[in-house]
Length: 319
Ligand SMILES: C[S@@+](CC[C@H](N)C(=O)[O-])C[C@H]1O[C@@H](n2cnc3c(N)ncnc32)[C@H](O)[C@@H]1O
Image 1 (cartoon, protein in one colour):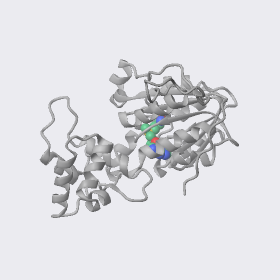
Image 2 (cartoon, rainbow, N blue to C red):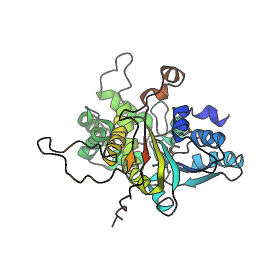
Image 3 (cartoon, rainbow, N blue to C red):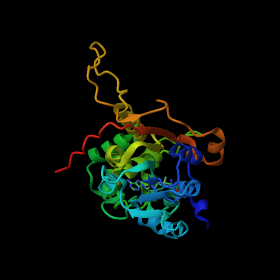
Image 4 (tube, protein in one colour):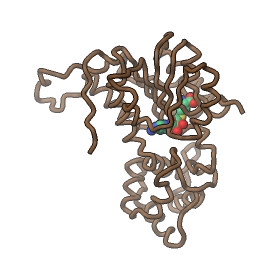
């Protein structure tokens, strides 16, 4: 199978046009996946790409791709929240792109446990290490599970589903995606035609929680302030409202467009200098044609911002 058959890159043309690579420039592809964005950048100009992916399988798939680009593609097996350890004020790049979430290859492999479309172990770990989804459903309290489903899946029936999980696990541990799907289906109304499966939100919530996806995004966006050269571009393609809200608020705040916290008081006189500039407050959306060809593009939103020359705030070290 060709790598391009495995995952169709979303909004590829718009991403590459926005990054506008030139010979000699250096980009970070924070989510290598199948290398669709990286390859398009490397093909457009004699630039270099440093590509992150926390999934060891994605890095393995990248090895033969790197072989095609005579040292211009560097693969880094790491979560993108760590990008500041390599790219910072001492080592800046011309652009950083994020294509968030999981890719089709991960979803389509039953053994990774990301999808209820196939039966597989209830895993969901991109990195293949650490606590998996079955640990959470089998050991967390009913309240903790309900909170995860509500917070990361915006699931209105979070309490009902959590209760069903806790009563099912008293009979037998929940170890398979099909078990969890059946438990959810048993307490949810059948979806109307055109509606998503009633397990969709719960699976999304567990995946986001297991991989700490929102914390990863917040940390990486903050690191991008130091990692980008003046004029460097940040591009983020997101797929659900939780991610998009983080990106939108970050860009708004760093471009000096955060709303006045108190509309009855004048804006503070000395606003900090904007760290990013934007060309539009609205995200770009995929065309109808792209959505028809690739349903996964349906919910995509692309936001971009350009680094100004204002000095970044050093990132506070944890601990
Ligand atoms: C949607 S796919 C990217 C597809 C890619 N743009 C392409 O064209 O093939 C997302 C990829 O990002 C990786 N990923 C998600 N979150 C990550 C994180 N926090 N750090 C590093 N990689 C991450 C996933 O493992 C997955 O391979």
